[in-house]
Length: 396
Ligand SMILES: Nc1ncnc2c1ncn2[C@@H]1O[C@H](COP(=O)(O)OP(=O)(O)O)[C@@H](O)[C@H]1O
Ligand SMILES: CC(=O)OP(=O)(O)O
Ligand SMILES: [Mg+2]
Image: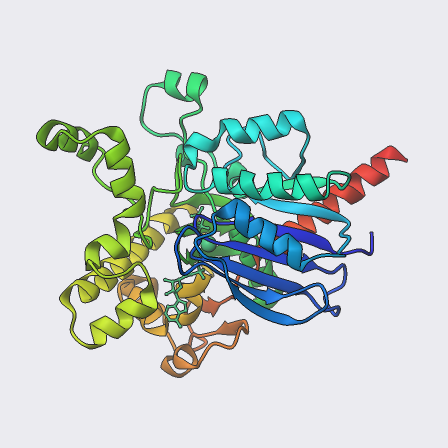
């Protein structure tokens, strides 16, 4: 049980890997393959000899990138492999050891998370081939939100669709929200309190946490509901699909691509899905970039206000994800849109450059405001290790 856990986090266009040691004072080998599927695809990180590296992947897809990662980890013998699996449907409420039947069940949920589950499976298949004798564990994004009450997870649709087809809200980014919520519990004086968490990365979601449990969240049946994201629209009028079909003759496939890949920050700005790029362009008065940032911030605030209804008490708000962690102007604009929450942002603390630390950014009055860098890999490793310990215990 002292060996490290290899964590594979396959996103829509990236793969993060981490060899997470049993004890936090030991070094962690980690890296990331980015922009997969494009000519700019690259892999950078630390290899099994502890050396930093960075290399082009020349248009590699997920499977090719996984092969390149595993090559760099040659000689590594982990305790187990923990996989981030985005959609676990209603069946998977906690980390689960992967066998042939679980593998099939994950495949079956792929159509509910078309940008994610197929990528997760590519990562799983690559490590299964190399480490076929090691335990492989699935840690689901949806599991943390299985504590939602029916009033939060049911859509106002005929019951049959829920009972027979599992059509309900599931929520995602569970490992991130769970990690941040546990850190807030450790750091804040409000132990086990009421928190709103904004995970703002390429995919974005908010979550209301009460006493360590998710009570509501912005994503739904798929990771498309809710906030404006890099290329995803978030909420639109459900009548849009029928309208585009009738008026423009668009197929469902075309509409799906529009909402998942051509919308969000990219669609609004007409420029980029990357917040850094948009902030630069907005500083030069690019109208599309200014609008994209304005809509993004307003929608995050609106979602936080809506989710506050799920909390008996609001102790604070935490920002995480690439944008939540680094974009101080975005955080300030979100807070500005919530004047009735009594939030008092400290301009100095908010404006300080982020160097990966956890920090408070309020003036010590009103609900607390935090920046907490997320660590999905740490959470996935912990859940993997815990599952193995439990099965070890049960077997004795
Ligand atoms: N310094 C920064 N300022 C503004 N935005 C940033 C900064 N660093 C990263 N971001 C944004 O974070 C987003 C990516 O978030 P991240 O959580 O890394 O993505 P992923 O969901 O792929 O893990 C991008 O929009 C990127 O522009
Ligand atoms: C669920 C989801 O949106 O994940 P990601 O942020 O990795 O795209
Ligand atoms: Mg992400």
